[in-house]
Image (tube, rainbow, N blue to C red; front, top):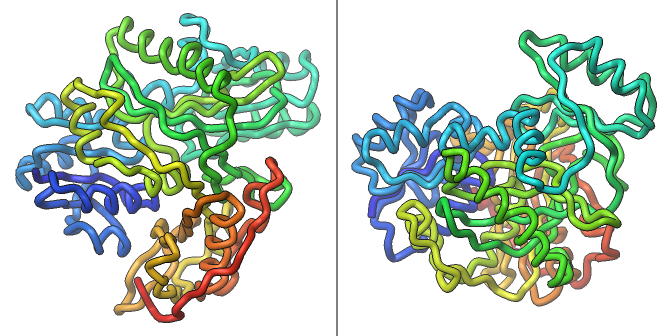
Length: 428
């Protein structure tokens, strides 16, 4: 089977690594890819529009197209592929609205009785300001458009809410969601979906702010633990009250969801509630979950694309996984580019990987080329061991000025344990 993978981040590197292992995959092509993905796939340049991506899939004789990021999904890449008779793992443009338009998504949850925070949506700044001033703080202000995991501000007072709203409405055709602040632990549940059926992955917990202790501006994610210790009865509520009605509601509204549905949740005193839905693998959640996958990823995504997903196709290890992101100096503002990167060659027994996110090869030298640059992942029988291995690899990476959170897992009291043995040689 020839597979085309669309994307260029650490998420797509993790996907490529798993697809390349599959006996079903005879050829893997990626666009635009990155130096890490190039170790598993042939990279091809492409304009990136839905039509251009579909043209590439046809030229390459792709039997299956796997779409990683949200932007091409929101633009209708899956629709273009399906219109040309291609098999695709990724939702239609209409189904991707569950991430691409937060105002629509919140209204969808309201229509289908999916628990979420109380909210209102606005296309007018004055109305949004009046609503925010009339409600107790803290309050959450969200840009309704795609913002690559950012665009959300938790406002401690009315002045912060006003500043966040004014920033959103600086753009033309802006819209915003203002919602009540929810308390509790955040957790992510990802689910493989074939339009009707779904199978959940181990729950994970992201660390979204730039600084330790959950302070500072929001980022795309600075580290993940997986699995998060979610009680079985709570996990069942997530499946029954959130994932199932979301899939059922999308199908009822004429937009069956094929791909990975991401449910970002708050474990409130009243039970799990949706913070946001995404229409694809989380990043860095994918880098934490996929290394634990013991079954064939290509077989799973093909089954989803063909509407025949079964629970026995999906099997995960009972080990723990940890991801620590290494970001460029200046992130999440203007990140430094061109910073030299020296990666260690890892002891194969370490069960650790360095996924490339914002990297590039310049004159044969690996350098930073984005905000989040590397995602260091490690697996182990316990979470403290996995964290210890991941941080040992982080410390062996040559990356001057890298921003790293040293408290991944702190919310559940997890601390790194053990030391890993590394071989310090270049390994791009």
